[in-house]
Image (cartoon, rainbow, N blue to C red; front, side):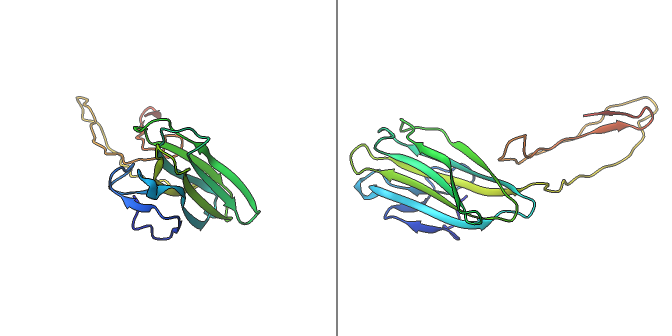
Length: 193
């Protein structure tokens, strides 16, 4: 969800908050356009500090590019301002289609260091036009606390079954974030998941 590009610095003549395509909720940011107005480089940039425990940067992109990567592309660069080093979490990419799928990128961040992320779309000015939607840019901290509830109970004398409902909202991957339930039989000291 992109909220009026608050906190982002823009560069270029064709940058818009868009509801045409979004990875999460309603809006994304569109860099470039399906007309000559989108030619050249259009980018958004934000500087941030990594969590004190370190963490991971995530973002999603949707690249509409029916040209070739030699002419048009999307890319993302990440500058570590603390160490003055630059990485390219998203190298030049041209999807080769007008109906791509959302793709995700993740980057490990060093604790407490300052970074500048730049998301960019390049269109060389010739037809066909290329443009890119970016969405759901966020940082998670390492060692994020777990939240849990627990209850101890006694099964009925005749036995029975335990049921519960859950709704999991998770836009990351199971290697980073998850929900789980564990049941321990205190009589036999046997856990199950």
